[in-house]
Length: 236
Image 1 (cartoon, rainbow, N blue to C red):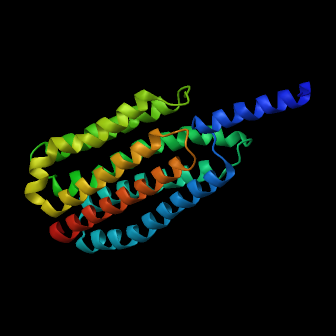
Image 2 (cartoon, rainbow, N blue to C red; image 1 turned 60 degrees about the horizontal axis):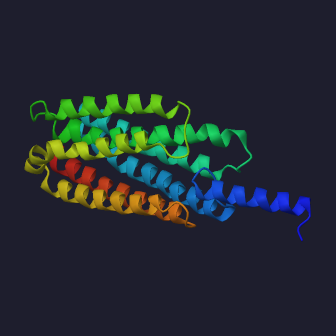
């Protein structure tokens, strides 16, 4: 027979496990993998950033430089906030606060990813470039505000916003394909990575599924780096 103490302890532990599986908290091992995986993303952003910025500055193209800084800010900020969030222990009061930054930075990552595409490849394609540029950054600003409101365990509104921003590339598919065909193929591969990762993200009750999601996000980022590099080589 359980004593009241052990009954209370077991009940607390089961509640804690449910919270972990619901996505706010993960086990120590999971958080280690989560933080290390997106630490790789930081390194990837820094290394790629050096090559990309050198290319832009050598071309003396101010729009390319602006687009690249926005891209690196978005990607680097996203991976940095995610790494810091997952590296903190559960009882650290900053962990819940960083969760807001972690979610907000996803909007910056998406908007930043569009910046070199819109300001380099599509800037001279009528309103396509500027229209998409303004749309994604307005969404990023609105999304940041949403992220700092009282956050539930899982925000469907945020998920819808992420999807709409990600799919907005379909609006410019034709003009982008005309000027950067190879980049479009890399963007398609990127989308496959993110969609596959989202499937694992949705399996919230299984251990290490969030970590698997992180690695698919890294794969998507690598594909986008290739898409942007192709644009730089072809158009600068």
